[in-house]
Length: 132
Length: 360
Image (tube, rainbow over all chains, first blue to last red):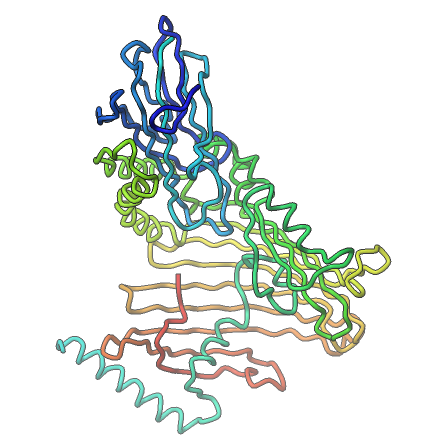
């Protein structure tokens, strides 16, 4: 992985491998996580929505590795509060997968973990796909 | 002013006038302060305390640290100590079994134990003994909501609706290089659409069926020392309560409470048992009524002659008076048969005040 113009990880998929999917989930805590994945061209211009995720359907299919090479993705999500008192712990895990193989897994640096009480917590995560 | 409001004000004034006449006729039985009404409906508590540990302490800790992450647990445990001695005024609460709950899907479809583990809250607190002896009181307690039909996480339909509505609000693609704070702002803007759904949920579930239990124990530490021979059991407490709804407008709560205190003064109460029930109902945001009854046993191990049994009864009705932006409260109750106590007979109280006493 190398840093690019946008400071984000680059995820290398096998060009001849199967389709890529993104999973955004809270695997260890019963928190409600939902959001949308946005796609950007290699020149960082917007390319629309890649799909949505929620606690029931955490996987977003991104497509075959070839057409995705050089594209950027932005995860715009939220952990929805349930007025927990005392506050509860949450941790969002973002995984990029090719079939059953996990290519990259990370907790978003921006609000990806912590505690939640009476306010929704937004989080973001960016990465770039490459096919090798 | 509308005719209805005028009629309401006239009715309230008439009612007040009648009460004043009654008050002059039986001055010793009537009071006109909100605090008397409050005392009448709060002298017996129904339900399990939010933090049973703090219920045993003679004063509630001024600041309670809310702990969510395992890292904070060790930090807070150390915060209870000042060197090798207990620090006073330290308090925290935590969900010790939260990691057993699993994902939301497991929480909704798994066993009841997942939900109980998540909802269980442990609290620990210290406070200086009130007798200025330099001793420290250390209390620990646990509250276990065994059943909570008003748990929003357990309601899949509600969670789905929140998620669907939120996602539908994410309709503007941010710039890839936009600062996180700007994207957060878009995200939270979409989440604003959830407020009506949340309010509807609260309205629908405020009186859902619940069963709670609570347990607590308190130690007295001589001089704050943690050595075993300087620690002495001081109090124990146990609570159990259940509540259920009557339509969407009412709720009934039944509870049982037992506390036991080691006392060296014979005239002080050693055990207290209370069993009671309370019903509350609300109508159109402008009328509320609360009815309660309890039986309380006060036991003195060393002086049985001081033992006392009392019955507590109270009824309170509150009417909102739009014209003055406040409430008229009329209550009737007391502890009939309790000797030597101003509340030892049933009496009437009324007052006008700003904030209602009966709440959901």
